Image 1 (cartoon, helix red, strand yellow):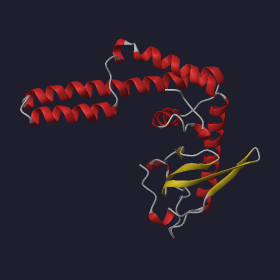
Image 2 (cartoon, helix red, strand yellow; image 1 turned 120 degrees about the horizontal axis):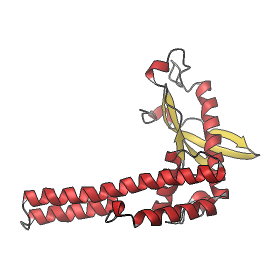
Image 3 (cartoon, rainbow, N blue to C red; image 1 turned 120 degrees about the vertical axis):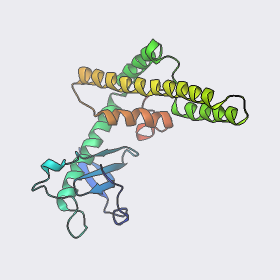
Image 4 (cartoon, one colour; image 1 turned 180 degrees about the horizontal axis):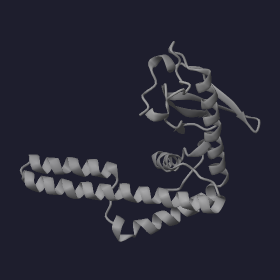
Length: 213
């Protein structure tokens, strides 16, 4: 797995590239000899992606992203700029086609919410709140430990339903985008779009609304 960027890389040179005469800027968020992660800073912000991690069996002769002297290699900088450009292109594509993707998202989400398999699901925050209440009931002597464990198992099952529904929503939205536009957006990129809009709908992509939740 990738590791957090060492402190020496927190002030690493800003990554910069150009696409259609637009300057795109970003920085490293994770970095190690066989992989890296970057985050875009401008003209979009808060979105990140990573390189394909080089598996153990394929490392022979691979040009390390970190040199023996502990500096970022030119090979890494070059690859990271290409990755930053591709992330920017995906964000531009989404912004240009947000109405259509919004429509697919809403239709899929509504269909899944009424599906028996995903009914009575709860979010992670709801799970934490209800678990605290359940613990308090045990502490107050209103339920015993066996009742607590049964109640916790039910809450966990409801939370897991939400996770399964989000995965299915992500997969179906991926398929719709591929069918409509012939473009493959990474699942983790779609997850970021959904998650970050859920965190702050008014923020969205480039300061606008990304996906209506």
